[in-house]
Image: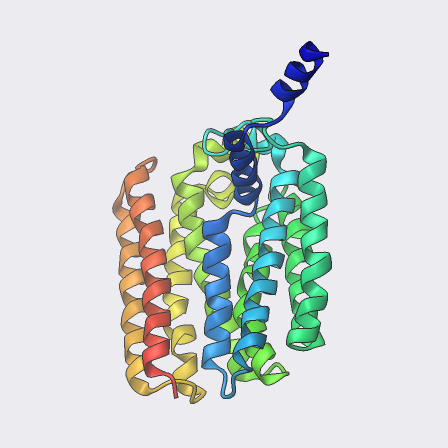
Length: 302
């Protein structure tokens, strides 16, 4: 009997093991990425002409975070075989065997099953529908498409651009030109952002068998597309000023930011292929652009 007790006690997880397990579950939701996406939802709420009450706004942000986290969990579940082949991702909880696939699947289904009805109640059915579209298009359209076509770049930008529109609809109850301007800004921004990643990590993506732009169409073509989509951010970034959402001071800043990102993209055309440093620096430049454009929006909002 004492032997059985010692054996049973030995099989119980220690507090440290339990914390590690919770950390792995949390990691499945890609918290940094999810946090960035939720911040764009908050921006949509803030920029709307009327805001919901603080409790409702908090519920919208929590619900959005759960849906975004679930999409990332399902992405991890569906790509666990690919992740096991790439250096950047082989240590994630699923390919490393620290989390069972069934656990991830249950989490990826369970969170939105709760969060989407919560969004319908806290905001409105339209916001909940947008959350469902973002989840399905990211996990079940974009994720498998990456294995066979570079068109996934454009499809994946759709769910990534929906969260600020969700914030807008949660506050206004409808979709209008101003909400669509926020959608367009995030949609176009993602294109040079992910083109930079496809250049920077193209060897790793090749190991995983993913059809990213730089691998399929060549690095120079990816750089040209990065330049073109960065330049497109100039007029798209200025849309809030044209639509009266923000001041023309914001519009001038948006033009400068888009122009600066375009110059950063253009500088890559003179670089030799295979130079990862430029691609990584340009990737960081796209992140700086996103932070700066939203700060400018907040300061210049009307």
